[in-house]
Image (cartoon, rainbow, N blue to C red; front, side):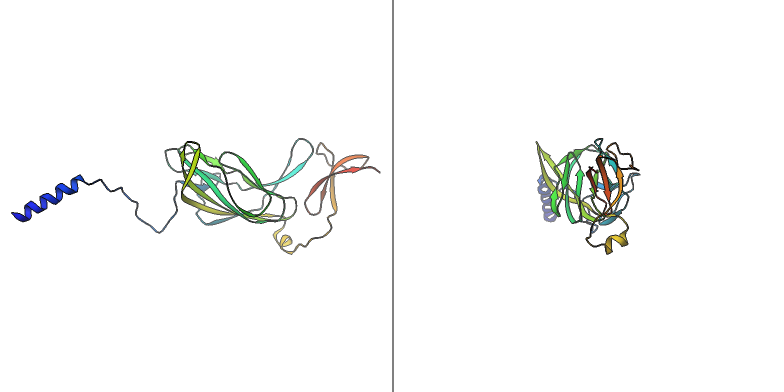
Length: 226
């Protein structure tokens, strides 16, 4: 009888205690997967992956200046059905030339030196996939490496407080033949092609201003006076 009364008393006390929040079982993965890096077709890029980028495109800004751009081709997906906030912490380890650019999640930031940085915070809708818009703008053959890590945030008013780290990925850009990049040494760049200001290739040079592409991959505006 005494044992039954003690057992009933313990149950009564337990009923008054606050419920313990459910905690996910530790599966050895100490990162949060609210957000994932994905490719254009939605394939998840696993945490810790190294993505090598060799595709480069040349764009004309409309004023006759040609810019070489190497887009990463990556996106970020919110895997939850609810809105969630984040920022991206990134470290540029190698930057042989030009600028590293990231336009995510809300604004564009250009970096011209190695180092560790963070984007501003932003919010993505539930199940939204957004272009990471991260690219290298080289001005000469070489490499650029950058490691990006998603950081899940809590938005409090206009502030984004960091909560937990998400997946990370390393981007490795290679502009020019990789063997040639590894063996290249500083030297004198020589002109390889000429363009008029409207972007047309020049076959005969006259007096005027031309865009000149050099052997090191740079493009400069040059005035011909002779």
